[in-house]
Length: 316
Image (cartoon, rainbow, N blue to C red; front, side, top):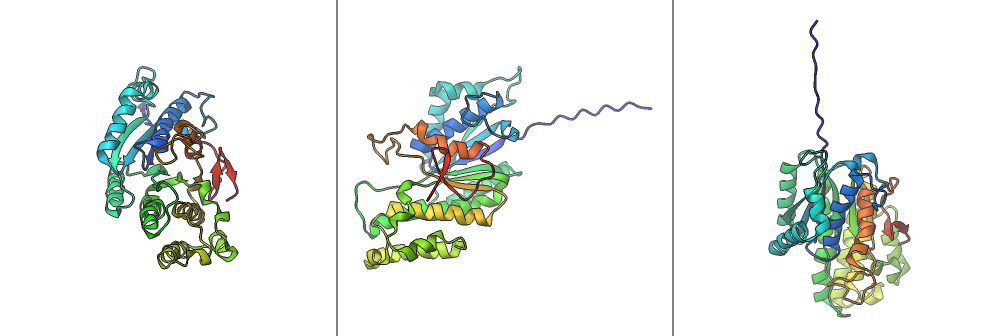
């Protein structure tokens, strides 16, 4: 009899996370906390905001910081990697003398969600690089205009990124997301359904049987009602940003219904001190990143299709 010793080395596959619009603000803080949280998970830190994660989430995480402007994005990666002491420590960590056991990794890739060719380019890159799929998509990229200006130009500036870009990113990346993966869409309380004055229009957005096609028709109707000056009598608020986020929350619900094998949630990060919200906002970017990172990493009990804030489900 020959004694055959088979040594099987199982290399823990790393989780892959993609964060859009991540060169500054909440997006950058999300990238930072994904790296730090994943590191504290793997060392079973009870102080980690995601210490309730399932055991599978102890595998190392590979985070893609993406941005429309490649030079700003690469600069953000360099600053995180070289100037942020906490991140520097986790990226360089050694485990049991091994070089890369459970170290998180950080990469840059250009991604402009208003440009479908850019989305497809990143999708193809991820397909090739991570043939078994990705785990987390955080749709953070968004725009807002300063002040209360409201006209067709503001709508044409806001919706292509906040709604149509988020939709396109979901459509192209969902086929890559592993079973049990997560999508987190950054929405806002500014997109509260109560902002819509007419009940019949509100009910269309809130309908359990709303399809993606119907939702897209509603968003196009907003665009055309603003262009024709009939938006007020149709029941729309005079806020392109607000309606874009109503769209994102509704999109989250529709996609969650259509893709039961992944958890798809939206969240309001709160009023955060960013270029968008200004210096008077109450929360730091680190605080703004808490709920998105919780939805990406923590055990959320299989909850999907909901709007969250402060790490719990809120009513839309």
